[in-house]
Length: 248
Image (cartoon, rainbow, N blue to C red; front, top):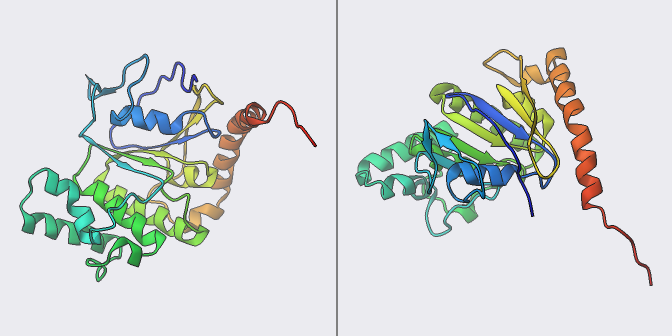
């Protein structure tokens, strides 16, 4: 099955780039290729001018599932990447505690994933990704499984952390509101096989707070993205529809 075909994209250092597109258009596959987890059948991904030919250790990945190790506490999960890189125990423990505090999880250091809510678990997963100070943070619908209130809170927390680090972020979502709230640029993908249909600059001032969601500028940007996306969503739905229906 051809998932991506002719994707041509440049991602700028320090930007917050968001990919939106219909289900099945290859957004997650694109992240996997950037991370070096999946080998493209053709084409090349460059990171700082160097082709990605194996697992890219300069990026970190946050999945839609929390992907925490159930036998490790919150602080030990965050330490994992630092442990692999050989950082001394005390140094990595202090860094992990600092990140927990930034995400409002002081006091939960020794809790195991099953003792944390979904929002807390995803905070730990994001903190674990940021602990290694990656060049690029890949995020594949990280808030999709959360309730609406927690989702908006975590969007704000993520922006606050990003403002302080300016890590390059490539974020996949199906939510237009989420894309507009977070992004410097939004990349609209076509129905499968996915290519870049359009790239839109989100002209909203930073830093952004909750009040911006009710502004006319926010609504205008949301409308622009939806106008470019809705045709592709319709195409994808037709492709996924069964060719015929049988009844007994």
